[in-house]
Image (cartoon, rainbow, N blue to C red; front, side, top):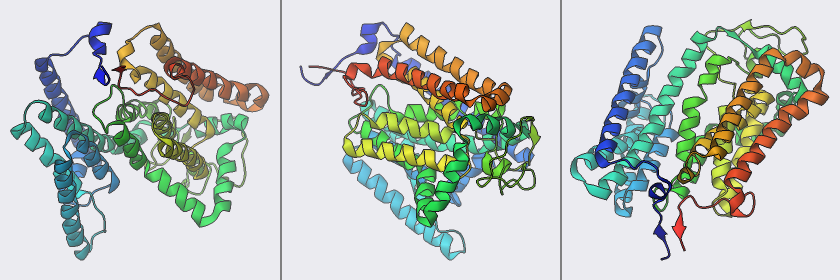
Length: 439
């Protein structure tokens, strides 16, 4: 019976959702998202910055904030369509983009794209819900839903960055920078390395850094090329984007180039980064400006790049090499551009592995193996943040003890994750296909 799918939910006793319950959950989810968008729009308008609904309107009829995110969302929607429908949708989106971009450019606006992708994505969703039925409708709406969630998530994220400023008038960079001494101040080291690579090195790293969604879409489309597996990259990506920014409020940090460099707008400790490493054994919260997001702890770019790396392991060689390249370059960029400290990256790694432990292999249920990993990851992340804040001085003064702990304990957690979810594949680095089949 080659290729026959196993109903793991029935075999493991998991609750199966009826179509009626699915519809109710879908309606509830849509209402919740629309309500949240409206609430954030009202809040943003009252504070004088762009809200999510205004940004979405620009995606339809103005200048899109991002050229790649709308097309990434449309690419996800292609998973639920036939080849003929994909050709029609993509060509229509491209034609709309060319016309709108040309009009905008001739009118004196920027030369960018994205309108066509959003318009066609919305059209597919409306048409599928109105005209199609059965499996065709379900697949199309699942693809449109994932694509729309990706776009909407970026709108939530933009507003949240403004909220981090309002919630964190003081930042904790002095503590984090002090703790980073135990790791050898990697941001200062990488800053000098990036400077030495010149314009070419900077250009490559900058492109990799800002086009992280493109790499994610490549991996996700490979995973979704034959349907809907039990777990895929988009789920992890969205959950990281949902959970990660909460820590921006709990632990406000702006980054080396702002707190210790030339971009501090007069609020920085001094112009130290990346030439001089300061050492102040009396750290304190420091007031900062009302324009720089407190979006360092943890490093979500590291978290997302690690998720891309993990999910690329189940693909062919070119995908595995691509995932490795994106992870290495992202780590180099986050440090080398002065956006993050080394300890931010450690927290980002722990966050990704914890959330992956929540999502991976859902057919195995919630046994002790998963509870241990999720609880352990959550406790480890909390311990890291508390140590950065309250033990920064001893961490910096005793690097021979603190460095092995900062690196070794997360490494042990990563090993436990790999043994739990990927040991069955026979070798670390070769991940099983998330679709289960009976030979």
